[in-house]
Image (cartoon, rainbow, N blue to C red):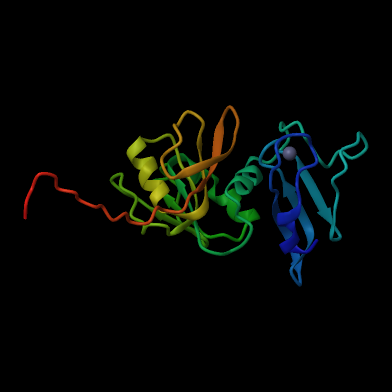
Length: 212
Ligand SMILES: [Zn+2]
């Protein structure tokens, strides 16, 4: 499976159209030889073996699960964050930091963990920041952002740190912040895309009744 064609694939389960993410165990010449494709909407997983993607979901094909009960949560999170390559870095806020190790095992994207649970430490591909609350990242620096249950202010700051069209994932209890467009939602999470930042507006000051 040519890695650049994964973008064109869609989950065959009847639900809203959704991209799939590849977790590649072996890549040769930009072809995924062994791995898995995961659906962020229904959590189905489709195995890739010997370069062949198996989308079959019949009773005799137990490798693909559409129940969600057996789906790998880390793969689903990787899918929602669209971590399809090693470009840039993804940010995991708060409790999401617990997922970094599992995510690192299935995707090449480096991670920055902001205030992860106590005990979470850095590792190759995993950088850890401890803060007083403000997110110390440049605007648009992150390719993707997983927001914990946090204040609206922190969510806004997290969105600001996410690049245009970067994915933002958050608990469904958090109201959608300004600057993102919702892509999908379930009982637990929503996934959204960072919208282009509006260009600075030039305000025209019309001063009435003033003779100058
Ligand atoms: Zn699906």
